[in-house]
Image (cartoon, rainbow, N blue to C red; front, side, top):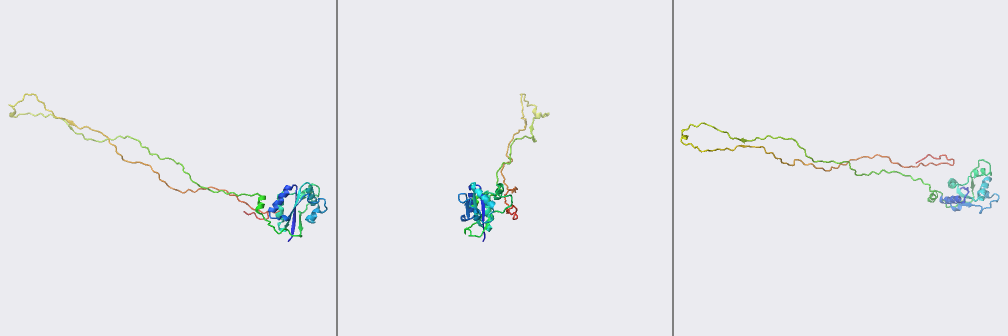
Length: 271
């Protein structure tokens, strides 16, 4: 198996140390990670960086490393299998390493020409046996950029509301009525008749006398009686019906897309 050394220079020790911790959290063994500052290396030793990282290291890249250390920066290297170069490079790139090529051009160390990345092939002693190069919970703690997906749920409840009243009111009305009544009357009728009977000739009563007869007549008597003819009451009658509720709920989704170093998609986006 071939192994490669991935190298990155940092302007500040804080960024370098953060990169080292992220490499460890990412599963790279501490024995395969090295840190260099100006107290640990002889900056003026000829061919120093080439001896540490291989002869494929360009001169202007070595000069940038030396310049970074002189200014208080640090250089971090990690030995990885060929299959994990992209993984290690991605972790280092998160922590703002120096762009060696741009720095070489802007400082006049090298002309503005295209140069290859600093990855030296090494066939020396193998890297540490304990390797867990994968995204682990520790790496997630170091890089806590998480997309949290939310989803709405439809909750349907009920509440009692007053929709109105039904009122029954009692009141009095009047109407004209009539009834026919037969009335009986009794009156006196004077009867006069001539008398020729001789028996009354010798028996004449010359005293005053009076005879009376009572006359009667029926009169109309009106009275009223009341009775209950109807009852009216109220009661509640319950009924149920089904009502369908229509609404829209939102849900967040993600699209996963693998990108190459040039930013171009490597796979078709998938949910």
